[in-house]
Amino acid sequence: MKLASWNVNSLKVRLPQVLDLYYVAGSHDFLLHVAVRDVDHLRRLVAERVSSHEAIGHVETSLVFEHQHRPQWPDFSEPDPEPANDKAKPRAKPKPKRAAPRRR
Image (cartoon, rainbow, N blue to C red; front, side, top):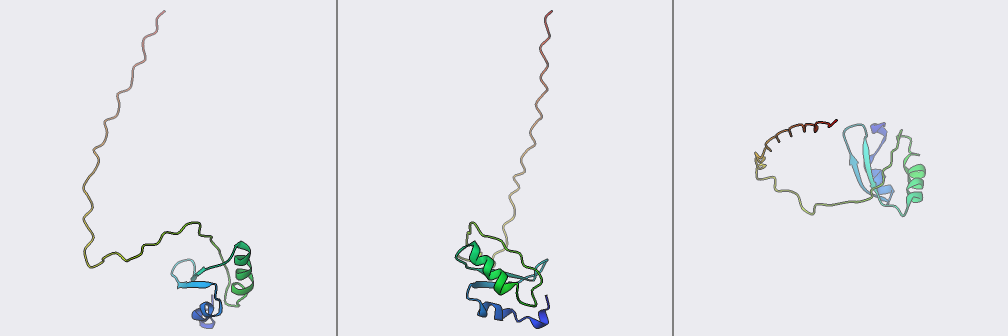
């Protein structure tokens, strides 16, 4: 993506469907959180509004089926607790059962 010619904030302002826009590290440059009516609305939004921009080279979509949200941040002022030292004792392997002798 040509970042010099791409104003990241303009996308969120121009498209009311964009709820959040993340500039991320890794294999992708941006992550857009959008709200759409249905899959067809998503297809039109991506095809007609997002991927048509000259600075966009590739688009991937994902659907969120379930979302859980933590309402507050963890308290980072306290150090992380030490992990419990509850190493499970290894189980003894069961002794192999001997086959009963065959009667002739």
